[in-house]
Amino acid sequence: MGHHVLPLVCTSLIVVSAVFVAIGWYLIKQGKRDTHRKVMLTASALALLFFVLYVGRTIFVGNTTFAEDAPDAASTFYYIFLPIHILLATVAGVFGIITLLHAFSKRFAKHKKMGRITAVLWLLTAPTGVLVYVLLYVLYPGGDTKPVIDAIFGW
Image (cartoon, rainbow, N blue to C red; front, side):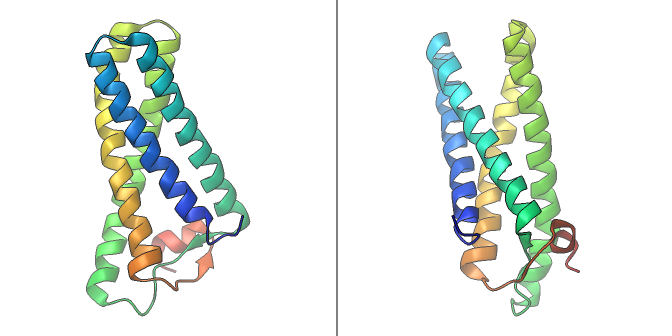
């Protein structure tokens, strides 16, 4: 799989994961615990697959920088928005792990409380990831691929 395809695959995995989170949230509200569990484990597996592919791409290929020929306003927006997306995604991922651990440990009161926050975070993270993809690969394609730290800080 080429390094140009992986960003689309990764973005798609997160979107589908978020759809599964929304379905799982609906199912638990309907009292369908077993189906909720299966759907949420699927959402988690998709998120994990995203993470493995993203880290692998970052290590072996690098990340794409924002296009140098993009308008200044777009560039400024991107470099303000990207750290917000990264922070949101990181917090959502950590909360997701904690929420899963509560469920696996049968601490369902804590799972329920944490799950509400985690689901909202995940449902906010997915669209921000789509926006990053659109900015980098659709609206302003052509940035160089380089190590992640360079891409984040615009070096």
